[in-house]
Length: 140
Image (cartoon, rainbow, N blue to C red; front, top):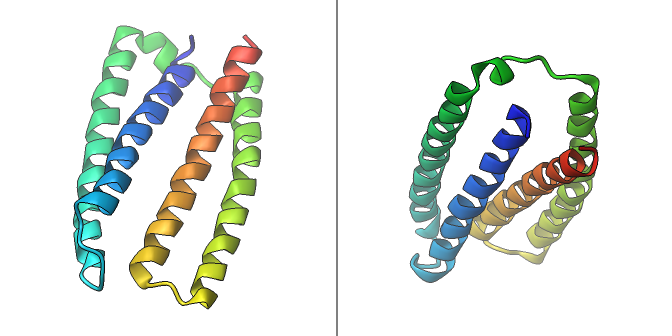
């Protein structure tokens, strides 16, 4: 498994855990209403810091174990995998943005719109990473 594939696994797991916790807390522990923006902002700050710390530590350990692999330049296969993953993530992103536009016209609250946008971005990013991991395994 290459260094980039390992970092993709780390990113997928960390994002799934962190944002799974965020959206669970958002819908079970936080009050809904106008004050929800501040509360979800605090949760989002904690999630962001947690993701940065977890990924930095885990990827740092992976890089320390095999520094030569960590510093290797991306080859044509890896660049193609990156491009294709980004290509596939574009479609759920566009559909999610159209969903959010529909929610605006339907009169949904600002916290709902912001969290829906966040969910769209997180889902598209997880699609990108998932496709890349699939391609790493399929092309291996």
